[in-house]
Amino acid sequence: MIQAMPVPGPDHTTGDLDALAEALVEVRARLAPLVLARQERRRTGATAAERLSTPQHLTLLALGDGPLTMTALAGATGVAISTATRMVQSLVREGWVAAVDPAEGDRRRRPVGLTPAGREVSDAATAHLRSRIRSLLDHLDPGEGAAILAGVRALEKAIQLDDERRARAVAASSAASISPSEGAGPDSGDAAAGRIPSRITPR
Image (tube, rainbow, N blue to C red; front, side):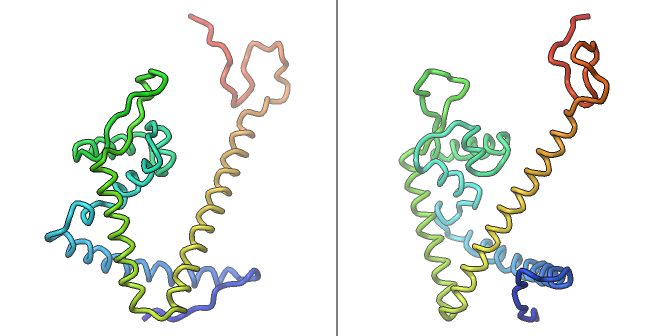
């Protein structure tokens, strides 16, 4: 059984973080099979909205405010363009997403949007998800429900901060790699170390 642990404060130690990380790994290992088992049980006799996968639902939600290009849709859902393309193709086959004529006539950036059926199934899936979560929370007292919400928000913050830190590290690494090498003058025919020549001379 997982023991309750105090949340580390601003002066938490490495040991605190290691213990908390270990507890969360254990929670994930125990929680994932429960979630997957519930998903399998819901497949029998489920409606289209109830069978909607999380990636499908998130894609439909991203299109809820209007059509998006594939690049914009990939950014909104946090996946690669190739992944977004495959997801859209599956939703097109279901009749929930369709291509939309671009306003400026650029067919290379043709956006996709929800069909009436797609909006209907998206709304139904959202209502079903809300009902399922409410049913789970009904087993808890108000304090436990509030703790879950606070924990999820804290996890969201942690992910955002970690992404920002990684982005800064990548930017710093890129900046270091394109710094001019010592001794490479502006009239040198060679590119500075780590830099790509601005012009390629035909052979």
